[in-house]
Image (cartoon, rainbow, N blue to C red):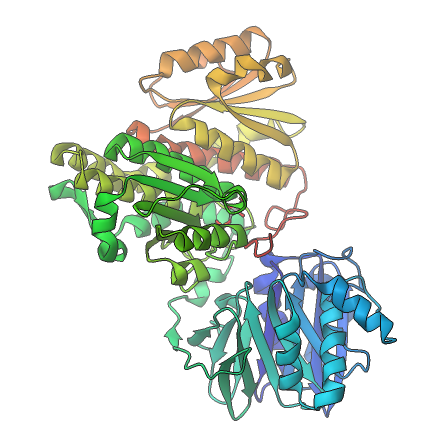
Length: 610
Ligand code: F6R
């Protein structure tokens, strides 16, 4: 949450920073702001709204200066308005900062500062930190030391960039809980919340760890802890490429990412299937193979869409490997003193690898002695670095705020993991082979659905004025019903609920009338007949049924107002295929309603606050 970019070098800085902000805007779009130091003065432009709104106010290409920083905000403390927008300054206006995170003890610090006569313009915790640093500077006359001393008093989280006219050729950066990546160039550096703002200019990066700082000048950089101990930070080579973060010919990132799924799914399984052995190869978990073999229980923790994929994972692992699995909302797990055994394996699933709740849940599990694994998309992210082992999703950068390709890649990797665990225990080679063969066939089946996107669009347009939706499914198709409902509500703002189809008659059936569209995932599997009975129950009450059904099922057309056919597959893999029409439906409905699908209101990608 919140996008941060800073540049120091010899180029015009504001342009580079704003270009970076545009790429990081998916992290927050309540306000945008830039600060530039030129000729020992700092100029700040900031505004409520998106980066585009800022650019209507100021032509950044005309701002001189080779040191700048910028911020896109996802509001925590204080309404999204011009005053609360970052950058914030100390009381003299000489020290400016941008901040991602929450200063939890800001009221205590603010009271102390108010008592000393300091005043504040905004309602933000970030301005309190700026003024606090300024107050310390008045005593120590050293910006780095002032930042360090302030941060040692601060509780909460920060990804922080500080610049100052006192030392106009320096950027100070610090992190606790909010990601910071440093791009290392030749006499120039970029600091950002994630590598997408860096990759166009630099390939070598350093990922700061919690409680670390970096001091950047045109002559070089140093890294240390906020306790002032030297850190020898490792330099990594970025695998990201600039094409991956461009929208191409698509109207929205979300649509691009939906259409990328045949290839991203393939990338997630590439080199990992041993079809002839009915097995899989997961290099990332080799170091903990024995722990996995002896695990008494698996706990999967995640949030949002990743939590939905975790539910599919639960069904698959229990089915294929016969290991008990529990799925936990990370935000609940971390605060309720969960029972964790030493032979538990706790898996965190996260696209961003930075979700604060998931990270905290994994840390808690680690503290209590469990082996922790990360199924993560973003390479070098905090969860990827802090877990004992893991499997990357290889879905490439996901920029649309609503998760699409990461979800299907999570399902791919969970399928692989379930097969791996199964083969360690009870899964036969023959069954493994059947699964591996079908998994390899899924990219073409995803493509088959995408080739029929126009039909799905036409169906979707019949429902753009709906005010409520129900999504129902059973077995493996229940979690994907939850995911379908989440996709629709987050980007179209239509209220939608996912439910296990059979559970409907215990309450939600009361909602059914002729205005209620109900999406049924009714694929041909063992419980198909039961799902059809549930569908009849909805129809009998006048509900408008949209069925996602297996190709060749002519019976269903009789019962549903609309049918979207998906290719046949194994029951474990229907969530992958059923997700595609649901993503497309949500997209087309949201676009038709005039919603900003890539930046839905109130949301941001990478939820780094609690
Ligand atoms: C929904 C969505 C969110 C995320 C959730 C977890 O489309 O994107 O629900 O799935 O915030 O994020 P990650 O996977 O980055 O931990």
